[in-house]
Amino acid sequence: MRQGHAEKQQADKLEAAFVEREKVPNISFSGPSDFGTLSFKYPKTWSVYVDSDVSSSSGYLAYFNPGQVPSTKSAKSRYALRVSIVNDDYDTVLRGFEARVKKGDLKSSTVKAANGEAGTRLDGAFTTDIRGAAVIFKIRDKTVQIRTDANTFSQDFDTLIQTINFVQ
Image (cartoon, rainbow, N blue to C red; front, side, top):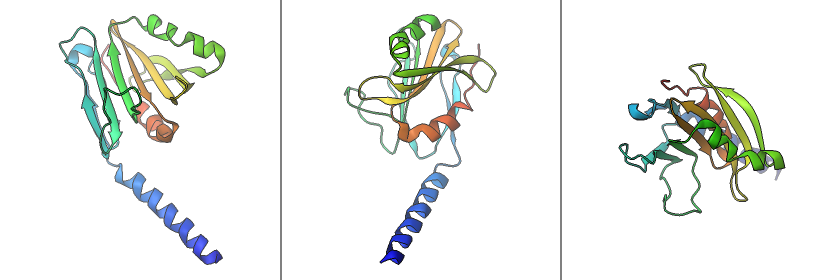
């Protein structure tokens, strides 16, 4: 009976290793030049959906998920990664998280992009339903937020944020 358990553990371990290998090589994402030409590398097994018009004054939104990207119309949808570039000031965006940081739901720390620009990293509960991580950077007169909606993607997120680059 124990041998069956050991075989299952070995099979699970091999499957997990296969899933990680399938993500490589990473694909390069590059946002529009009007929004600072944000770029980073993400797993090739993820799909991307851009949900805004680049000429829109409201900003830029992109969603990433393994396989198929869930509907952007549902508040219950969760994503491996969300990217939003907004026309709001960096400090204004950070103030939006201040109450959750003070309450202890979110932990705030400093993070650096690949180009050396400093930003803010948030880890924890963004809402009652969303636990994950986000990085926020100032790009020119705009602010970018890159966030994962689930701790399941934390390893991919940590790898991805090391490749973030943009033009100031």
